[in-house]
Image 1 (cartoon, rainbow, N blue to C red):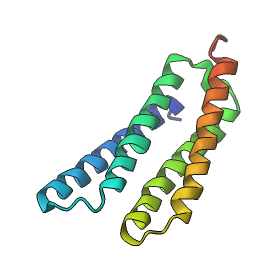
Image 2 (image 1 turned 30 degrees about the vertical axis):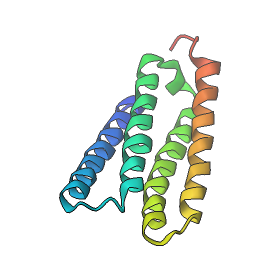
Image 3 (image 1 turned 60 degrees about the vertical axis):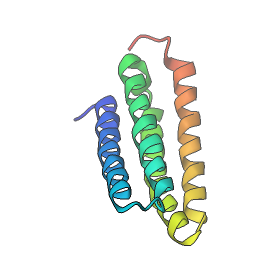
Length: 124
């Protein structure tokens, strides 16, 4: 089974490549209408998920918690929802998906903070 840290990094890198390709397309087409999607892919998808992967790698005790899997799925689901929701926002002005996904992502971030505060000092 692949470890949570490697999974986070792998998914983050996939978001990075997708975000870079979207940014390249926007530049070539001189069309910035999907800028918010590009930013969501790069910041929420790549940067935040990669940071979570590094935290799990540097503090293995975080991944030993049963809450780690819940935190992982909240972050992954929330990030995907934010990217898709930002597309709907950019193309039609629709807010519900990006708003709901943002709440899910924030809960995942709060759980990550809790795991770090509660477990980072413990041995793996």
